[in-house]
Image (cartoon, rainbow, N blue to C red):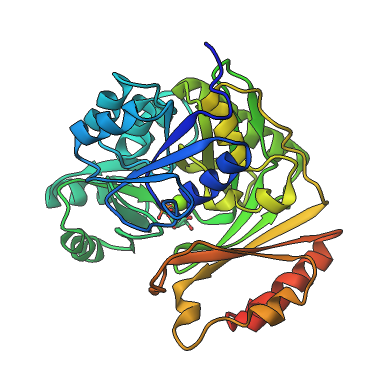
Length: 380
Ligand SMILES: Nc1ncnc2c1ncn2[C@@H]1O[C@H](COP(=O)(O)OP(=O)(O)O)[C@@H](O)[C@H]1O
Ligand SMILES: [Mg+2]
């Protein structure tokens, strides 16, 4: 396969912050960018050469979009399978439609993982109240009930301790298909973001540690404070997952680390991930450039860290409810870097931007995180 060289046009499905950061890298490297989504003046569209406005389910429009670009990639994995396959008849789409099909649906994803013997928490498919009753009698509580499709940032999921709670949660989901899974009493959550090229070249970033607030990623710390052997194991699992999916591009595996030091896969994202944003300021090559290189058939870059420790703090719309955060005070730390996504409306829980900080030691990093969180008024 001939590489897709600078000067060519990258087509991005989706138009949020992940596409924006990809588009920034693509432009830096001399590529043109077009974005496909129903939104106008979107975070990605503000950076792209052309914003193609159409519904995600419009296969004809998606094909027309594909004709205008050299390769199609995505920042949003909930593209319908038939739309992705329609695109594939026109131009390469990376990752391939089958990867999206698996990763966009929690049940298909868990089934793929468990049939390939990857570690996952016990789960059951739920389509009726009777299923729920049976599943609860078989699984250990507490459990988490999640919609099978279209969940993100903790939306469409509830922790349940009993059948009564589960029934309430099920009715509230208003979905015809869900997954009930055993709640993992984890020691910590980590993730591995990695890139895989057209030729199978695999380049992982160091495993990172994630903490959530209200089910939304709050802080990522790199590297994760885990043993070397666990880090190696997490990377090996990620490599095997990408190979099993034949995934070209960037993929994130979210893991739970149990108290006895085992890894359980929580979920997959076949695209750059929020827990990889720190790589923009903390690595030789960031996750977005890696995605670009992978989907263009170029050699992958070095994923080495450029400082010993790095952290990312998410900026949610909540912070704008009274006034704009105090950027001057935040930036008075010379190691702090601000990223804002160009979103027009700061809604509660909406990802508006992030801040990265680098440090020589974990202790110094912790001090910087606390300082930033205090300025933002979100405690620690
Ligand atoms: N089975 C589980 N056991 C323990 N915590 C869970 C479980 N499922 C989800 N969570 C918590 O909720 C967060 C969000 O759930 P996740 O399945 O990753 O959905 P999303 O697509 O919203 O990221 C996880 O990062 C974790 O903190
Ligand atoms: Mg998640």
